[in-house]
Image (cartoon, rainbow, N blue to C red):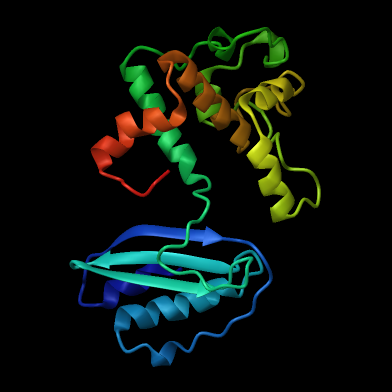
Amino acid sequence: MNLHRFKNLSQMKFTWASVLLCSILPFWMVVKANDAQDPIERIIAEETAKLMKSPSYKAVSGVIYLKGKAHYFNYGKLSNEQQPNSNTIYEIGSITKTYTGVLLSQAVHDRKINLDNDVRKYLIGKYPNLVLANGKPITIRHLITHTSGLPLVMNCDEHAQNVTTQMACFEKFRKEDFFKALKTVRPTDNSGKNYHYSGVGIQLVGYILEQVYQMNHTELLQKYVFYRSKEKQTF
């Protein structure tokens, strides 16, 4: 969305509280932007209509919090052909990586993790495959900066896998499955210098955090993030 358009509204300040995008099934829609009387709602309608033209997005929900008023919006259709609403639960997606980064900073502050330590220092078992060129170790810093060379995904991502099949895979997925697969991967780029977005690397950071704190990820988020941010509907 073109956020710069909001600057013309009497220089009003706004905060995006949440914009969650969900890609599910093909859906075509037309938004009659002129029908929205409120200027904020009109802009939301116009910009969302542009977004929904992309085949990547089939449903969108969000809220703009402006001068004490929440402007909620929901467009598109879900996989069950129902329209989303303010109570629709979406997968949080890569926002999880931001939370994991916050937890990692806490661990560094607590001296439980050193960013330049070999990741294998925190793992149970041997992982001779987790090395870079010239035998240099993959470090926590490599993982969190996406320079480890580890793949984007490693589990529940078979070719042409539909949403239903993928969700069924995730329901059966266990931590043991991740570490079993981790023993078989090798960095696609072993320089340790180039950026390659890796969900696997951040997932590994999450498991390492659980190991050093002896708490699960949900407990860590509750103690170090949600307690402070007062989030009550993030899980």
